[in-house]
Image (cartoon, rainbow, N blue to C red; front, side, top):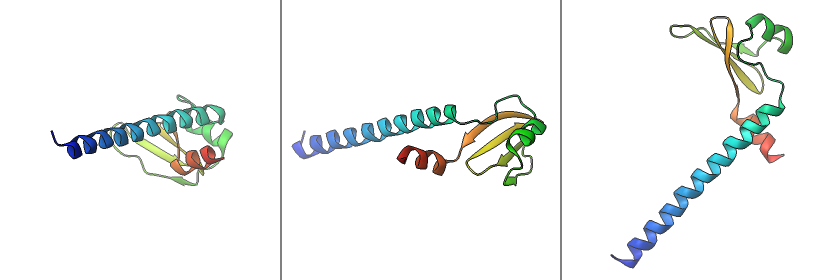
Length: 101
């Protein structure tokens, strides 16, 4: 094999591995950040979210069957199936800002 081809392959492999490792670190940091924030938990109702976290910045219409609704808050979005929380997700800019300190 050509030395240049081998060198290019090694560099590409290192580059790809570096990106993968960085993505893993960011994901772990996002999970750690979310665990320190007071966020709506799975299974609570829309009424409980309103009572404890206030009005969302935006409410999106239900999509699909079963209907999935998204409420957008400043730093995160809450997803509901019917009336119950199924997931709370930090917005990317919140995770990046917190990781940069």
